[in-house]
Image (cartoon, rainbow, N blue to C red):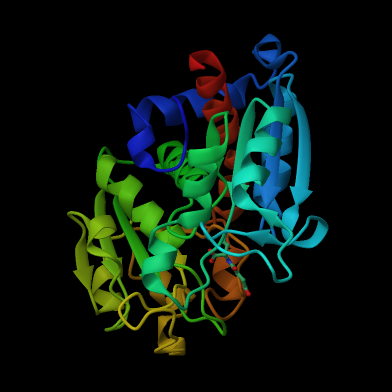
Length: 315
Ligand code: SN0
């Protein structure tokens, strides 16, 4: 694998997920592969799981690591081309990417969308600039449009917990007080389209995701109907793609409660975290044995480990 920025970078998602699960069984079996290699992690936005699981994954492979919260610790970065830099931005992304990539062998980038200009966000300009101007492989740590490491960990978690050959997976919108990116649901849908699952996406009207991610999923505005017989309930809030970045609903009827889970086939509850308790999901559900949220977070380490191993082996 050259870079890891979307499902398209992966030849066989099932093989990669199984590799992750096998690394989970013996995390230190490939210590030599990362010798004298450095992973760089650059964050334009906050992180807990991504930062720490990536650090652990690198250590498990014998890699060195550096982390920078570039939005707080670096110079302000100019991301546009051909501009007169006479304002408060001291450093251009072209030099930043070129320089940082000289200090590492694999470079992870996190950059959220602004949620005001849809075309700008969906061009994934910051991630793309690093792909263009860095000299090493790039791993997306969540871009404006996708969160592929999360999706890989989610696929691993589904594989570990599925009880039938083709589980019904329901991606459901749930209410949230802030406008959030579409990256997690986009990416989850994109990966589930390639997985051996029956994917249903449910949300209120106006929350349709970009078609390129929906693929062959069944889309429904009726959450109760969608949840019938679900094996996995993947809850996530996102802001509107059509009325870009807007909050159109905070309807608490979409919160995942015990009553909602009772409609499922003894379904498991999933969320990428961080999660707003009693907005997205009731305490009773997230604290129940049906909740896989900690498993998902645990699998983030081995998802990253599988990705790094694959990149180190082929570059
Ligand atoms: C991010 C998102 O894409 O939705 C990261 C998820 C992995 N989530 C948030 O920004 C949550 C912020 C909040 O206020 O709850």
